[in-house]
Length: 288
Ligand code: SF4
Image 1 (spheres, rainbow, N blue to C red):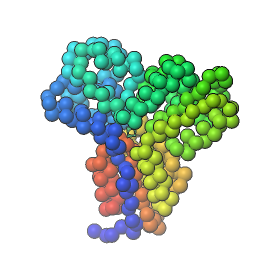
Image 2: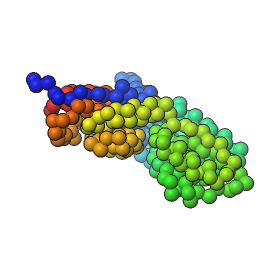
Image 3: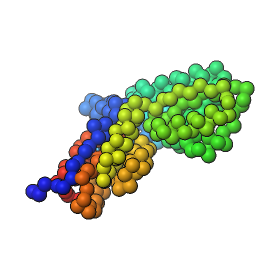
Image 4: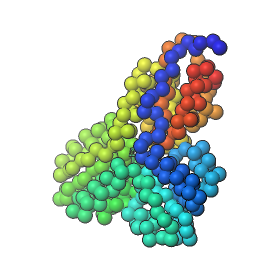
């Protein structure tokens, strides 16, 4: 086989983070026990993993009504976590609950619950509608604001008489977080800022940026609905205009000029190792 004219660099931080691994392991353990098993929402943002689990009998439950309808078995809460209301509903339902909420997300729930109980207004730097953000909102005893864009930070108006507590979605982009905080700080609220972006995310983003800076082509592997993968794509794209977002090796369609020296690969927190290895092997063998 002809040796490729480029070097392939795969990010060491690519793939499952600790929280996702823990949730996936919890499901695998239950399958092995032969339990009737459900997950509240797809366990991770990866269609292949979810469909493999489905084939093994894992059912995805999407609504509170469906939880009420369950008569037995196990329900796994995924790493994103859920709101306090949903958590209590699951605890008092007829299923055994396995809480695989990532401890880093749990910490945010605690901060939000405590600070809102003390009277603080909660601001979440994150993407509205993302399940992790929805869950965090649900631990605040007062309505929480979600800010994901500069315009939203500009138009945020809190009560100047009450403190503001700011937290972030664990997978938010570090640079963007700092930019939004700088906008909020102009308003001189009595503001406490807890940067709750998790280390796994920070390291993954920094490594992706470092590789993209020297890469001629960059490949980001992630699920269509994975917000941390979408952010990785954004980061890489800034450094390397030839950045491609793919879900699996089937999406790989590179057109090379022959001048490339480095092809970089990274992947979101919900991308399994075998998918990353498949892509890496195809790129190394020039099969695309
Ligand atoms: Fe936990 Fe961080 Fe993974 Fe989110 S990205 S599940 S906070 S380890």
